[in-house]
Length: 433
Image (cartoon, rainbow, N blue to C red; front, top):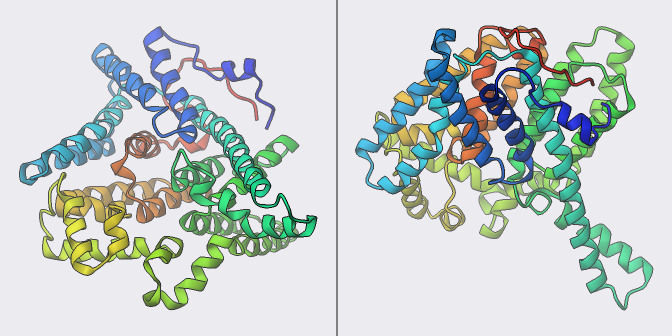
């Protein structure tokens, strides 16, 4: 990919149409750029975009294009509001409803706003730029902390003890949440995987493009998300299946095996499959490393669902019910850290009962049917589906708004991944890769 200078960066913005349309899209572009850089940074731009998007809905009512799948998101939002009727903790419930407004608004907006593949691609361009910036910031901060730690603890040591200390402790600064302090590593991993899924269908015809892809692979390695590693492995297999030339396929298989070996030797992953051998004997202080906390969250959530299989526990009471179940089952680590279900399907069931769970499941069934036509497209489905199996994405504003933009665009009658103009006749300046 070409180097993105300041002038090229500004060329990426939406420049056609009136100021309302431009503000809507450019606010989204800036928000996607800021998502990997900080939890709260993109929020004002998402809110601005929603406001101007609703202005477009009111102004351009005649441009309405009915998309039945889009109605599932407002339906999901209505079911969450219904969950307030049997919620005792109304404060938490109303807070979640406010954070979830984008599930109601963006799918409706996209039935009025005429987007094209080039404009949607621009969202991924800005997300890619944000990922590169966030990697540089995180790497700089981790290196600063690492060097300071080495200097503080090796003032009287010789050169070889310093090397030993560096080799033994580098991962405490460069892996997982220690590396990505401002945004959850699992969220950054999802962004990286979506960018890779979107762009890897193109050949790596330039050094810059190859360099960026390698940097993204390094980034996802350092984030040390087990779910992301699983998704990346599945994506790689899908890409290998798509290769027709035998020599290239054999080369790809060798590279895949080497890549798997490297990723499995990540200290966090190695610690995971070492501790999993004695799952029941793992002490509380080791739960976070093992990922046992998530399994315990799933176990408690399933037990709660079996106790209230129809309505769940209400939009605001789901987490409170989980805390009580953690305490009852003796899951101290989960209780102390106030963990949610760590699975959006289970989280939704706890909040809205079977109806909300069914709507979320139907969204992904439709998404699978829409993206089954190509391996690259299907890999995007896998990224989103497995991510929701491992995280409660729809409890934080950034996760909710990201879901309410990307999934509706993927569900439209013609996939945005095909690189074809969908319904827009307005010109945008394409970013050359």
